[in-house]
Each structure stands twice: as C-alpha cells, then as structure tokens.
Length: 564
Image (cartoon, rainbow, N blue to C red; front, side, top):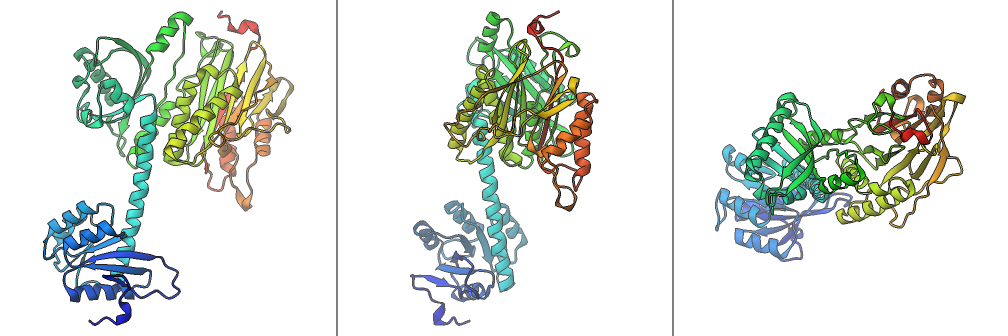
C-alpha cells in the first residue's frame, strides 16, 4: 500500500492520520512499534480512515528505539508488534510494560495465538489484535475501549488512594483478618500498636506473631465467636498487653463480621482505640462514657466491608439521663432512622452524654453519596470524639470541627463540605442550646399545647457549611423546652423528594405531616412520616441519604440529675 506525501508530519518519525470531518476530536498521540514497513503503513492507513478521532503516530522499528521515544516524548497509546529485531514474543510485551506501565498498550501481532493473547491481556494489555483481521472499525473500537478502560482504572485508583489516605489519618486502629486469623490489611494506627513499620510486616501474619500467647488466644476466641454467630462485638473495653512491653493498655474493641456477596462470614473487621488515658481520667471523674463506631474502607468488594463498618458507627444503644437509669426511666429518650441510598451513605449523627442533665446531638450531611461522602463522615465521627470537651457549647463545637475538617481535607486535596447541626438538651435549665452550619432547622413539637414549629426562627441566619471557610465562627442560640416536648432532627434527603407532575415534597409539608400525627408515640410517628414520604415519591423510595432523629423530653429541672 502506498501512502501519499500529505500523510507525513513535520516532526522526525511522526505521521498523522488525516483529520476527521469537522476537526473537533482531540488528537491522540500513538506510538507504533512495528519493524515491517508494509504493516506499519497499513496500520497508519487504518488510523487515517478511522472516523471517531485524530491520531498522530510516531513509528519505531525496534524496542530500544521505542523506549527512547517514550523517554523523550509523551504518548497516550502504544500499538506493539511482539516480533522485533531486538526482542521477541511475550518478553517484548513484558519489557515494554515495565518501561511504560502507565501508557495503555494494544498488541498487534501476526500470530493468531489465543494462549498468547490471553497471557498478554492478563498481564495488562488492553487488547490483542491479529494483523490481517483488523479493519478501521475494529482498530478504532479497540482504541476507544482501551482509553475508556484506562480512564475507569485511573478513577478507581484515585478512589482507592483517597480511601487509604483517610484511613491512615484516623486515630483508631483498623484491621481486617481472614477466617484463619491472618491480617489482610490495616492502617498506620494499627501498625503503630503492633510496632510494625509497614504493611509488609503485618499482612499474612496473625496476632500470635505480635502479642503474648494468652492475649492472642483471646483475640482468636473473639474472632471465632464473630465468625460463628455473625453477631458483632461492639465497643467492648478490655485490657491488652502491648506487644513491645509489659505495659497494660486499655483498648475499646469492636469486631464485626466481614461477609462476601453471598452473605457468608469470611473474616473479621476490627476497630480499636487506646483509651488508657480516658480510663485513668475515669478514676478521677468516676465515669466517662465511650462510644466507638466503625469506619469504611476500600472499593468494589470493599464496599461491603465499608457498609459493615459504617453501620457499626451509628449508635447501637442510647445513653440514659441520668446515667445508670433504665431507658424507661430516662429523662430523655431517643429514636433514629438511617436510610442510605447507596452501600454507604453521607449522613451521620451522634448522641453525646455530656453530663447527667445535658445531652448533645450532632447531625451532619456530607456533600454527595457513596465512598467519598462516607469517608468524610468517618472523619466527622473521629472529630466529634476529639472535640468532645467543647460539645456543651454548640457554637464552639462546630467552629472547632470546621477548623479541623478543613485541615484534613486540605491535605487530601479533595473539595468536600457538610451541613451540620449541633444541639444540647439542658434539662437543668429547661432549654436547648444550638448552632447551625447550613443545615435544615429541626422541628420542635410541644404536645401539651398542640404547637409545632421550626426550631430556628425565620430571622436566624445559619452559619456556612463545614469545610468551606477556615475562619467561620458559629453562633449559639437558646430556646426553652418543657416536659413532653419532642424535637425532630433530620437531613434534607427526608423532604427533597420528587413526586408526580414535577412536584417536590417540602419542609412545610413535613411540618404538616408531623402536626397531623402529633397524638402518635414518637417512634410510630417517625415511621408513619417516612411511609407518607415514600408514598409521595415517584419510585416510592428516597433518592438521597436520610437521617431522622426523634428526641423526647420526659422531665426537666435541677433534680433530673439525681438518680432515684
């Protein structure tokens, strides 16, 4: 086949396929490694006839020449013949991928060898095409599919890197074991506990390689119980002897089953936090209440693991006021409903037992859905624990969380933000204190007088969302409460629901539904409200993550904190 002179580009060794009508497609730089001049001209002609893109090709007839071109120039795709003067067969492919692992590669071979084709694809080739069986349409489709696959693989790699970055910045130690007790992965905090410098010193080993035999045997027994029953061990506090010394440490341990797609238990997810200092403080202040939830990790199959972790992060049981009384005797009662729209969600809430007469409620809604949003909720969870000393002042609480969140997200170089509402129920003073970071206003229901209203007045301007402005300061406000009052906190997914005829559910409609059901018990009213909104929705389901919390005030006054 003869090529016209117009196909020759100006650069040495560069040839450009003729432009596509309209000329709007971006140019794709292709390195063609082919020692047969006839085959090279044929492939370039096929590229010129392709209709879906512009291709600028550079030709190399030897593997060494191709490597020199890759070192001095930028290419987006390699078309590689395996039989070259200085290299032959699968070794040609291996040398090329080792030299340019990030450039997508398509093999163009004269051999119709299925075994060789499978071998190259398994080792990273995007496709294997046989010369003589390729036309412009086949070549064009192979290139287009190759570029799309590489784009998806790079997006997946970014997600995984983000996941690893966040997990390694968490204070809690996180690890995953298989059914035989061997570590599959862990984070920096866990390796620090083990005295290991890197994952290669942990993966494949068991607790017996790091802990004294009695301690490791106890861990093995716990793992076996979780695998056998499928039930988690949540926030159990126990004494652990550190691997590198005889020092005794207090750890709060959570273990949940790792399940495969069939629901079978195939391992254990563990989350641990060193609470030695907190335990020492408890001896002085008599009691300090700890709640540790789980984190989410990895992608694809790891989403199952992430969901197990995130579900375990939500409060498994609620504190009572004052401490020590039964839930039926508590001066404050809590109910919650959490409905993620994907495997993992971006909504989060936490109940903080500040004192015998003060309960803190924190609720937030992270931008977006899925893994990114879930990772930020994991950060929020850790920050809530870290900022616990400021929790009695909601304005200061949100200010400190915002400052810390911005610092973490800046290191991850990921633009994310979250709306949040922090509220403290003060039984002794008969009021609530609250601060708002761009979040929907809670609803206050006064059953005694059959009144219902939004907690935040129309003149109140909420502060900016968390993660936006470094110097944001959030204002604290107060509102009186009385016995039998009920508060409902929620995220915007509860009411931003589309119905028929492009109609949307609204906050005013939500207020009306709650008003109509005021005589119902709180938990029943919450479920009835969720049911009405689902009935309103087009697909009878929520399109955004939903978090709904009911807070019922049974008693107020200074004597509430005195245990009967």
